[in-house]
Image 1 (tube, rainbow, N blue to C red):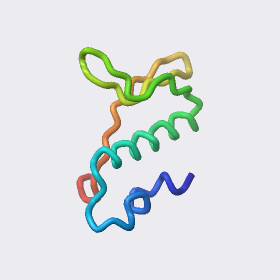
Image 2 (cartoon, helix red, strand yellow):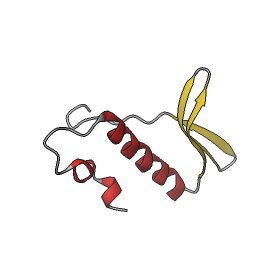
Image 3 (cartoon, one colour):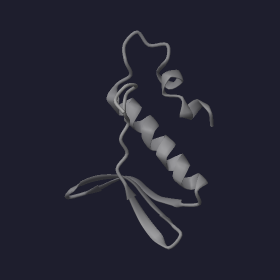
Image 4 (cartoon, helix red, strand yellow):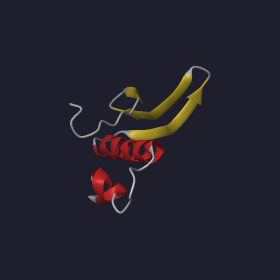
Length: 77
């Protein structure tokens, strides 16, 4: 799973930056993998409602998690 954990490797080999939708999909994959490793079951991804989209819906430890995934660039911390 190391491949998915490295954003630069995921986007390497391009003369221009990866489109934001690819980076967003990568970040959602990382977040979903993290939740699964913590014992949560992923119920839905990219769940659409009339109010907007929920990136990840997961269940575990007696709670339901609604996650909005964000990906920051290198110096934006």
